[in-house]
Amino acid sequence: MADNFAQTVKQATDIVKVIGEYVRLRKSGAQNFSGLCPFHQEKSPSFSVNVQHSYFYCFGCHAKGDVFTFVQKIENISFPEAVRAVAQKSGIPLPKREWNSPEEAAQAGLRRQLIDIHEAATQYFQQALQSPEAARAREYISSRAITSETIAQFRIGYAPDDFNHMRDALGKHFNDETMRASGLFSSKEQNDEGRPTGNMYSRFRKRITFPICNEAGKTIAFTARALDSDEKSGPKYMNSPETPLYTKGQVLFNLDKAKSAIRTQDYALLVEGQMDCIRVFTSGIQPVIATSGTAFTEHQVRLLGRFTKRVVVNFDPDTAGANAAEKSLALLTEAEFEVRIVTLDGGLDPDRFVQEKGIVAYADALKTAKPHAEYLVDRARALFPQRTAEAKVKAVNFLLPHIRRLPSAIQRTQFVDDAAQKLGIDSSLMRQELQHAATHRLESVRSTSAQQMHETERILLRALVLPETDKARQRAASELAAHPEWLEGMAAADLMEALAGAPVEGNPLDVAPDDRSRELLARLLSEDQVSDPSMMLVEVGNVLHTLERRRLERRQRELKSMLAEAERRGDESMIGKLQSESVQINRALRTL
Image (cartoon, rainbow, N blue to C red; front, side):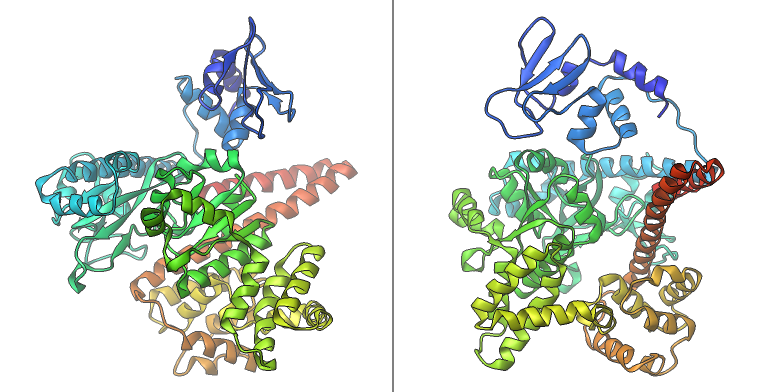
């Protein structure tokens, strides 16, 4: 964003009006307004905005800056994004953006069209919910105690039981490419990216629709609940497929509405499903987000970390929910989050608990949330309840990976002492086990079991054992062969390299390079396979996309260190080369 445009925006912007969207300001002088600071907890106003000089200052936490600094800080966005946001708030047209290539311009144009078609689809579903056909949908919504205010706030709608009506209605306003890329329509014929190539029909039919929004509140996908439960109706919940706008593992449901409360209250409540999230949010507990299922990814952890480092996890108490909580704990603790876990009485999910016992009881339950270490120890005792030596060994082995992930030695020691006491084990023995694991860390990583592998490795391994003619296998093998650096640090690196280089004929275990790899692969193959094989190509594409982003981010960190060293030496030639490569990587990251 050009400096002269930023200055134009700053001079034309009413800083009081912009900040007043976030802070309740009162006039406190000829040129000053004051209010409660949004960046720290306070009861008396210490936050001041000066009209004449267009700046803000907090006498409590000492936050200060201009209108761009304020929007950057409160929205957790970059400076160029803040300039654009302030310009839009002030009604200032943005300068025409220049693209590096026709392909980049076309891709940006498609994304804009996809935003527009999802907004049109949201309105279509909202209108359909008022139709006579949607009477049963309205009855179901009413039975779930969802109010008209909630329907409007979350833009809940209904997808009619019709293959063609929505296609024909939207087709009047959007071209064929946008329709096919949107994920709103299906076809019996699809291309390698999973987009329909034949005659299109509505993906969502006879379902209640819930828009999934990005951080800016724009609809980018849908979750749709079936009204019927027979086999013909398909799964109970159906999500939009991956599109240029939507990647499931990169979105947190309700973040657009909850981010202000998360920032203000400095914690996030993480639940599983959209209805859990909607119920809790509309009942008055605002910092709540959902993962749209039990999946929780590294990208979502980074996204959440922009707003808070404190999380309360309230997944369903069933086995899937407990397993999801453990995986979430692993990712969050590695990222140095403070994590607590709440388990609701009666095996209820948050939606039913609030309906049956009220939001006050739910708020009280949240206050009893256990620190993650205490939760895991209790979980180990529940999994291995016998007081035998064998059960204690299993409990310790269950806990050790979680203990190793803690970033602080003090935290690890405290975890060990608490676990030893509750399990009836000498704490010195547990410390020896922990030390042994640390000393043999490389060996430990290489002997990782299939259950402990990261999901990216599991997806790639499942693809690589498919027949040579399968498109998912072909793509995985060719991309891994072209980018061996992607395998760096993976527990199954040697195995994937072997599978990628040697098509599987017969028993895939014969391709495994060693006993450890054979055991790892055997464990993986003994698990339930992907329920929808047609989604394998999409999943492989998402994983490869993630691996490339990680590679670019690693290289960007390396360049930062190299650049600092070059600047220290005053090596102008090297500085220029490193800066040029850094710009290229930034461009590549923006397109991913």
